[in-house]
Image 1 (cartoon, rainbow, N blue to C red):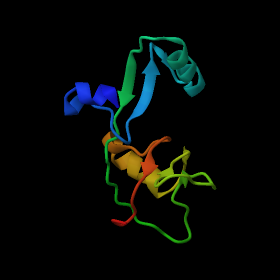
Image 2 (cartoon, helix red, strand yellow; image 1 turned 135 degrees about the vertical axis):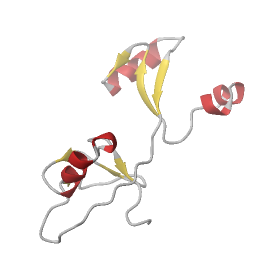
Image 3 (spheres, one colour; image 1 turned 60 degrees about the vertical axis):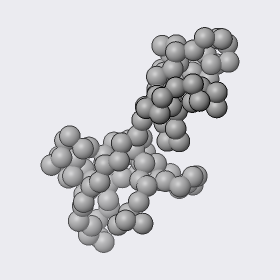
Image 4 (cartoon, helix red, strand yellow; image 1 turned 90 degrees about the horizontal axis):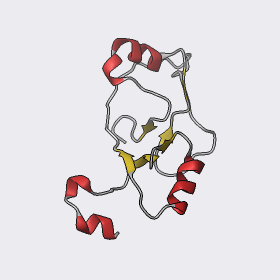
Length: 111
């Protein structure tokens, strides 16, 4: 990637980074992609993932309170919904580290 070789490490685009907006277009992946194809000058805002570790108690009779797609791709689980359950309890007790829709589970119990 030519961009990465021209900038310092903290400015490089790395695996796990994601596009937040392109030339002010945000919230619609298709519109951002169109903007990238149409313009020769791009101002891109990237999001950088942050690892957050949570600890919850799981009762086999109770749902975790998260939705994940039935068909997974890649090496992580995308959270599509947060509802009543241990994860929602965690969010109430830890508002600065809330589990949110769009977060990805990359490990469970260290694996």
